[in-house]
Image (cartoon, rainbow, N blue to C red):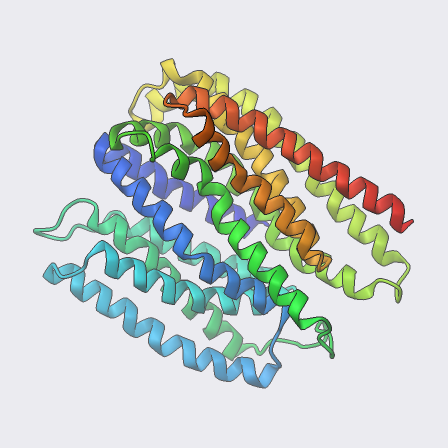
Length: 388
């Protein structure tokens, strides 16, 4: 958890560095590019989820590491050379990020399934440090955006090499893994839904807003969103730990009486995080303008309502992602699809109402997500009572 938190700080530093150094329009362009990359990295999220549901044996994982480390090093070297000679484009960066993201996420899911959270945290931390450090690089003749484009795939390449290298030095243990994988179709469906939800939920609002807003307005919204991203990704750190614990508890149902109590303990901890996020949102709303002018270098005094709404949305979106993950861990892919479809429904609602002002949209989104979370929690309580 500590390593994940430090990685989150560095990833947050990447956003802050971009907001401070780039102009409003360039920051809007970068935010749009990051949203596109995040959507494309759904494939990487799927890779990680599938690794949790279908862990490899020790021997196969060793060969897999060898097959991942060499290509990752080669791709990273090619990206650096292209950055120096001016042939690196945002599109090539996107493709490289997808390849490296799939590789790093597959290995990350394998160690996650084995509860090797220390190794997972180490890889996330080192990858985030490289990502943040890359923003300080300068490439003669290139735009200032080049280092930010390069930072994403380079951080993923280092994370993949760290994971593969440590696994080769200290082979993973198989004692936590199930000997028989049951319901393979439901597992694939659950992994796919969870991957889509993990990648899509944090980007839903910027995708919606960029349909009606200019790059400059998206840049202003992205500056405000820095506070909400800090809240969401700090809370989402817990989901990486919770997923394999939910899966283990689900495998142990009927065999170990304490498994249900353990599962509920994890769920209560997750629920408490939502409340903490809401409290933090209120504090950030009060301090946000002061922080922005003294530490970020731009004023946000006129955007306190945006800060409050985006932070509350982040807290509720964490709760929605948590509910989808719990359903996926139970292989209840129908319930997970219900939650994901409800989240995506914000697109239709926004289109139907035709909102053109950012503040109006954020208020709508906050209310909509909150009602949806209440509906999903009600469904969970009803199913829990039936199971008793």
